[in-house]
Amino acid sequence: IYSEGGAAQTILYRLVAAGHALGATPIAVVGGFRFAELQAFAREHLDWAEGLELVENHQFATTGTLYSLYLGLTALLARDGIDEIVFAEGDLLLDRASLAAVFASHQNVVTACPEPITAERSVALYLALDGCVRYIYDPAHQQLVIPEPFRSIHNSGQVWKFRDLPRLRGLCERMGRERFDETNLGFIQEYFQTLPGDQLELVRFRDWVNCNTLSDYRSALELLAKEHP
Image (cartoon, rainbow, N blue to C red):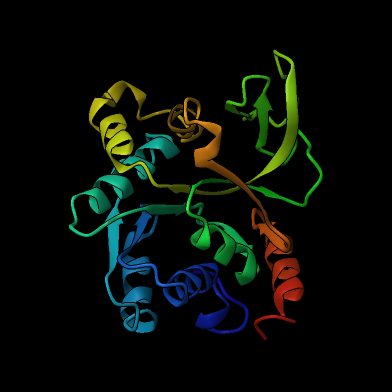
């Protein structure tokens, strides 16, 4: 919810607005740190987003990103009328046309971004010889190691679409608390790794920035200004 130009310039507002414009409903936002500020922001600036649900992760300080994903998925899977779920990391700014391609796909979707693949910043996505999706990421940001031959490698766009909801629900139901300190990548890979190739689409983003720093955030707004001034 940080901004240097009003509420509409925050990452959260842009992500919610983009999803809302593309017909996503309901939208679940999972938060933990300074959650009361997130709630206040939503009340003041996102009251137009029909179906918006804020989900609090009370254990954000002691769990990994998988637990936040689990909370968001279970909140949505408990609703009626859900036929697919699009999951986006909460620190991304990207062009709306690229996001629209994810929504328009009739397949399960993994995404790639145009940034170079580096151990310092990247979550790498590669397709093994059998066509299975694999993710590699180094929390220490030192090195990336691929332990097998592969067909292609990409920098993950950190947005996914899940269309097989029985599979997704089953993975959530089988998840034990011992996994809650993991990142979300193992769970996501588990969902995608046995999908037939004709049920999977790779969408490549055009303009994409993972806003880890204020410099990233400012660069992203400058990049996207031509589309969303």
